[in-house]
Image 1 (cartoon, helix red, strand yellow):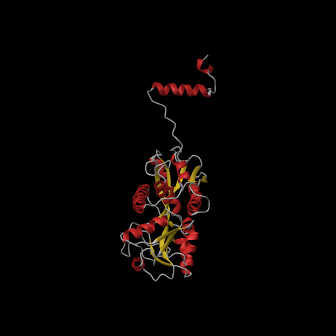
Image 2 (cartoon, rainbow, N blue to C red):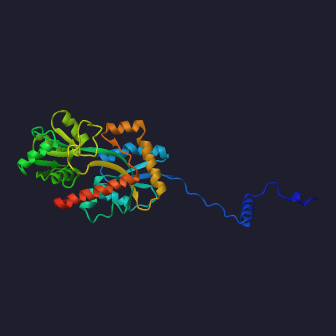
Image 3 (cartoon, one colour):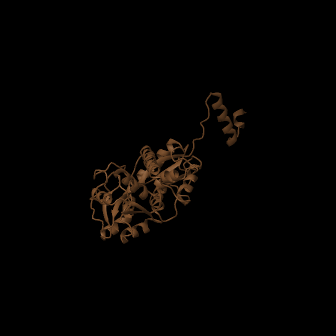
Length: 337
């Protein structure tokens, strides 16, 4: 009888696996290591360090769903307001560096908050990794219509004629509008009385009602009142003219040597996140924002698409820390409490 005929017709799976493993080892070949699943392999959490309803919340709720579609994974938005936008960003800084917890960064959480609160639990440069910007909101210099100035030079001349007589509003101490106005005043040697309000709405109301004369404010908030003749726009504060007001020259175009100021929104992750994940997030942001549908919806909400690379976004953060830090120190700006 042929002894090979006594072998089972079907070999047991475990026996086959053992035999293959032994052959591989005998040949001196290492078994291939299991490869990690490509990012993302599960839902991604994006922390918004503000309450629902503001621009930081709105931009991620516009962009987030599209990121989720491109990743084929849910994007979960988590609002963590508090402590001048630093509470939520601290959550991001202390999260696992695996890309599954990201944060929406802006001037408040990455620049002003840490500057005004030295004991905050993270360093925006050392503890966070920029992944790329998504959009910006243009800021503008506006005046009450009774102020006979149509250019910045005329406004400065009026203010210098009566030092301290004119008043400028802001949405609060150490806000972007407050710091931007102090940059302008410092660059021109001009003095105005600062009147802080609790938010952009009350500050706009004060300007329109004549309680104050000047305000640096986000263009989308000011534009409807400018069109109605209730205030006058005399300069854009950014590096370039806004797509929403292309006829409005910038402060720099009007001859002022001041750093540009705008509101930027981007995504950041914790220190230690891999370069591959950073590039994956950035490339997905670019693909999402370049889509016609999302781009149109962003413009409708007052956001101008801005697709800086991680390196460019990081450079802008460092530049703003330097610029705003200098004005905070020179003007002695403090936040009560």
